[in-house]
Picture 1 (cartoon, rainbow, N blue to C red):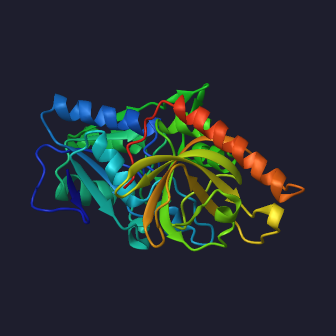
Picture 2 (cartoon, helix red, strand yellow):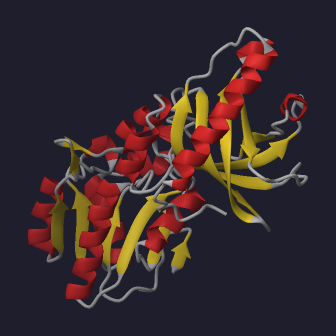
Length: 318
């Protein structure tokens, strides 16, 4: 897989077939677009090329309300590569790019600089200033300029088109099973293990406190989850994770704490990955520490039950 950080010149592609989009999450709807891209590339004996962005364009266009994201740039590239995409152009989205007209982008970038022979685009995608770069505009230009264009219809789930915003909402509501179905894999976050209060060890369930590596990534709703934990060295291990403010101890700040089953190593300062497999329960305040410990034991049993019967589809994030 080749990764370009700028629009490449000097014709590095053979009969390039291009799709453009943010592809946050690389979800099941995006996979339909990538499948059409690869199919067209095979049909024309060309190369499949995905043009995407390191940061969500809305972070530049509406910086006062930056969106939460499902995948970092690295995760997005890995997911696209796993689908068989051989060429990825990963751009830093800029205000200059946002102000470029769709017609100019097609003429100067898609045709003149890249020599694209075919464009594949999602049913609702638009690019260029004021989002004028629609399928209809591309179709009209293609007739005059001699390139092909394919529109990919949505991938529906329960008669609703799959979208990144839908998945974000499900994760924020704690609906991990639905989010996993829409993504086609389990949702993941990664981060550095930082020092916490040490209360979990005193309760008999030591936890690693996670500081997410990317502040824009969606964090699931407060509660307890069955998870898999990706560690460098030991590999993949099972665990349970709590997100919230630990109301039994009247904590003020929200934290992410994971208890890794059958592990007693030192993880401070290390990067770990978390794969969310199921949601066990809401976070709640208990009347006593003993009641909390008894619930944690039940949570462990529930997590082991769910993890033992789980069909894993994650590609890993470390």
